[in-house]
Length: 143
Image 1 (cartoon, helix red, strand yellow):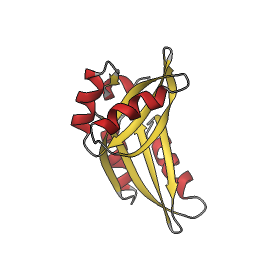
Image 2 (spheres, one colour; image 1 turned 45 degrees about the vertical axis):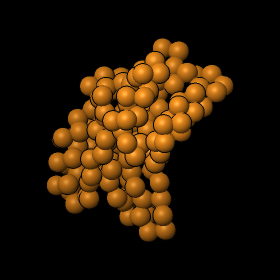
Image 3 (cartoon, rainbow, N blue to C red; image 1 turned 135 degrees about the horizontal axis):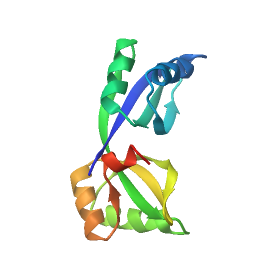
């Protein structure tokens, strides 16, 4: 039930993000969601795309350092305290959230959040046990 995410390092200068998005556009790869974090010299662009293997290849072929990472997509009640309901359970189990970001689509009455956990297998087990919906990559790539 994990989702494959691509992470690539971008120089923190004008045109770097445009170059990466142009490569994906020309390869007909759809970006489903993304986040960009920066430092003084580099940024880390994290992407969920509709074709992970193709994106990985075309980006590497164009000189980008690319890593694939397992993340977890979870439906979160779209109401006050919705995110907290997940954080409370995760914290009780001693699972750390390394980072998270929101997905661009809603799933019914719920929002979708992408989580990077230090122990994704345990997180998935705990979330499912507590009646949260964990969305598999095959469904997420097609939202």
